[in-house]
Length: 249
Length: 302
Image 1 (cartoon, rainbow over the protein chains, first blue to last red):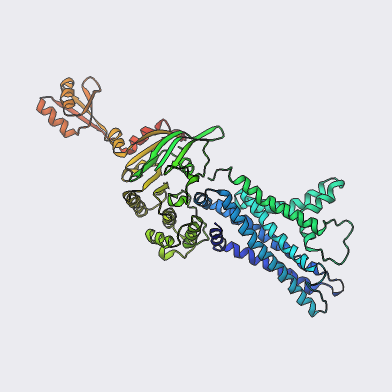
Image 2 (image 1 turned 60 degrees about the vertical axis):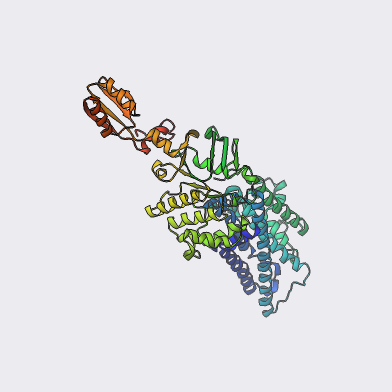
């Protein structure tokens, strides 16, 4: 089943496009930061901010991996070929996550090292050996992969590409920014900390040097990894639960 | 062999299929006929475990579909809307399906050759004509060398050459001893292909009979014969094996004899034939009459 999904994944252009976009965005922003940042106050983890492009591209890829099958009707052949649908969805999710973790980590480390080399030219030195630096880069890549799997979850639940892509954007990039602001003060900061963006920030910045602003709430790195893993588990379990209960027409 | 027993499928308050029972046997082409919306696709999807039945039981080669080991080696299907990602090549598509179905990789080249797509197997399916896509769908169905083949509206939108190719293929597959189950909403498509017909309307079974019997029973038309001696003519024609019923004071309705035979018999018996009107009925008409009461979506004034 994994082999089948592997063939499917690499035999469409959208996979390559998504990975190129993710690479261009992630590494591109690292380059940009390394070129424009003032040498006086360089924050190495800020070189990872291009990861938001990686998240975007991975999320769309996650949606497409499954929604394209529903939209084209291929899913009927797939489910008729393997009537145990959870095996199909499990294989898809597992393979997607594995590929995205590898890709996400490669991009995060590539972006970081690119920035490191460019900054070195300007006399600013930092490296992966610095305190918490490696875990920051690792967290950045892992969070990107999680966002991709969340896209996959939305894709399975909604089944249609346009609906799923817009819902994915709506949740990740809009709702999670807007809704906490509407909540009462008492819970606002807690809610804010649990948004995907802030969890990702917490995972990618344990090595941060400069103090945060008082209003800037983020979880501790450990709690952020925990939250991310819980979200990841939900993003895999929800598709597994719904997929056996629906008709495939 | 497909056995369907008491199958019902309900969407909300509406039954797409209601208490359907029939079997599809090997070695012949079984046509699955019914107007649009009669429940044909629902039934076929239910056989594959894609639609979950509200009630009833479906057996494929004696087992439930989900219990089959390597289902593609039992059932191959061509479902109506293609079911191929347009960005993938035919070969990649078939390789992916073969891998999921645990089928040997060499089958990919074998089915490509059988449907005549070997030369374009590297091209993206998005650039295929409808006929080529249909061939790819059939290649997918044949991939597991299954004993049962289901085709949902296989000739929809095809040119005459494509239609003939599919008809010949279906007959050949049945001649190889396979079970061939093919749906259509047009009787004319089945006329030259199907050995057996299952007709449904509004989700219910209307007929489950050999195609020849349907033709004999419902088509061929009848003759209205006006004569000077209806009583005598009825006796003579009935003795010759025709079904004869009085139609009016001087007219009888004759089923099962041609006009010249009626005239000759009448002549020999000394009965005068005044007029013969032939009422032709095509198989299409027979089918329409059969399903008339069951048509669900009827155009206003049609």
